[in-house]
Length: 187
Length: 139
Ligand SMILES: Nc1nc2c(ncn2[C@@H]2O[C@H](COP(=O)(O)OP(=O)(O)O)[C@@H](O)[C@H]2O)c(=O)[nH]1
Ligand SMILES: [Mg+2]
Image (tube, rainbow over all chains, first blue to last red; front, side, top):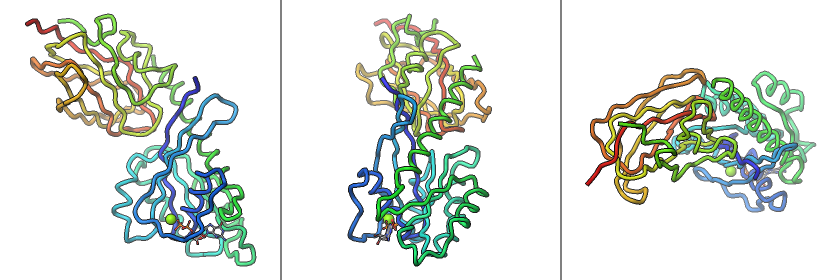
C-alpha cells in the first residue's frame, strides 16, 4: 500500500494573473482551460493526488484558489490557516502583478513564520511573448532571493503547468521523510 | 489504578485522520516508547481511543512532538459520538523534541477519548505514547 500524504496548497497572486486557469488546467490533467472569465469570489478548493517520482508514495494536494481582490482578503485569510505549501503566480505581461508577489508571499508566510513551506513562483502567460514585460531573469532573481523555485508556464497553451506541483509534492514528501527520521532518532 | 489506554488492556484506536502503515495510530497504545504515530499532513488531526468498557479516569498523559494546540474530549456512549470537551492545552515549542503533558481529571468517566491536534509547530506531529490511569466502572 502506498502512503498518501496530504498538503494544503495556497495559490496566490493578483487578480487576473491566471491562478484559476492554472488550478483548473492542473486539476483536469490539461483537458480544461476555463474559457469564460469568471472572477473567483472567496475561496475555491480542488483536490488532486500527485505521485512522487521514484517512490510508491503520493501527496494529495488540497489547492485553495483565492480571489486576488483586496476586497475579499479577510474572508480569504481565514482559509489560510495551517498552509503546507504556497504557489505565487504573476502575469509576465503585467508589471504590477510581478511587483505584488512579495506582498502575497509575505501574507501566506506570516501564517506559519517558523515553518519552512515548499514554495514556487510561477511566471504565467508566456504564450503572450510579444507583450511580455517581466523577463525570465527578473523572475528568477526574485525567486532566488525569496527561497522560491521558479517556473514559467502558459495555462492557455497547457504548457508546463504540472511541473510546479510535482516539485511541491516532491519537496513536501522529502520534508516528511526528514521528519520521520528525526522522530525515529529521538527514541 | 492501571493504564487502561493499552491495547494489552483491551483499548483500541477507533478512528484516526492519518495512517502511514509504518507509523500507524496503534503505536500510540502499544506500550512502547520507541514507536509512534505520525500525522501525514493537514490540520486538524484526530485520533479516538476506545477503552474496553466504561472507565473511571484520574490522569491522562500524552507524549508527543510538534503539537501546539491540543483538545481532549470524552464520550460515555457505546459508539464514539456525543463528545464533550475535557481540556484544551497550548503546548510549548520544543523544536521537535519530546513533549509531555499530564492532565489530572478527578473521577471522570469515559468509554472514548478523542484527541485533536488543532495546530502544530511543524507540518507533521508525532504521538509516541498515551497513558490513561483508571479502572473499569462496575455496576
Ligand atoms: N494568454 C493567456 N491568458 C491566460 C493564461 N492564463 C490565464 N489567462 C487568462 O487570464 C485571465 C485571468 O485568468 P484567471 O485564471 O481567472 O486569473 P485569476 O484571477 O488569477 O484566477 C482570463 O481571461 C484567462 O483566460 C495564459 O497562460 N495565457
Ligand atoms: Mg481566480
